[in-house]
Image (cartoon, rainbow, N blue to C red):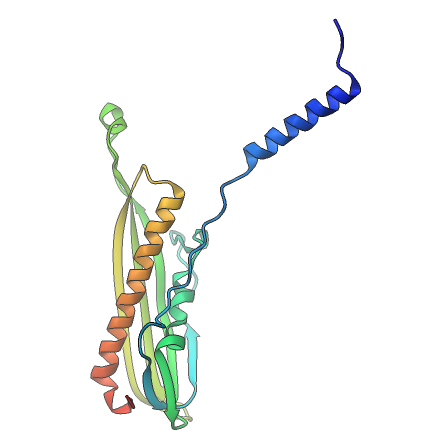
Length: 198
């Protein structure tokens, strides 16, 4: 029986390594655009500089954000860039994100034979974001303040892929941030209207 030549052995090894690398290759990570409010008209305040404060702290142990390709808190911090303008005085607008969480809880699913033929909702995702807007004089005296907290939740089926789960959570996050914008706008016009120029 004829043995393999050195060249044949090298090719076999190279082919095996190529298959191993291909087997270990993971699917590309999804990317999601930041939620923006550029399509909306900005609210113009009689004020000067705008300060932004991330006051929502460290994510809880069951917060999904460290494992998601987008971040609720970071996107919420962008809100005043799109929605606020200032002119006329040296007063300070301070915008703080006070809460930003995407937590999860497992739901009970069917076991046994019946469970094999049922696509149960296996996980509930709870989303929450809160923000505060203050108008301050240069020496820090508060002239006005409003705040808003909005929440959403949705369930995920056990048959969903990782990509489908991420897309579902992103869509809910985008809707949540639009809810925040509506609530902040309502509070601003109700309680800070005398400081608005438009």
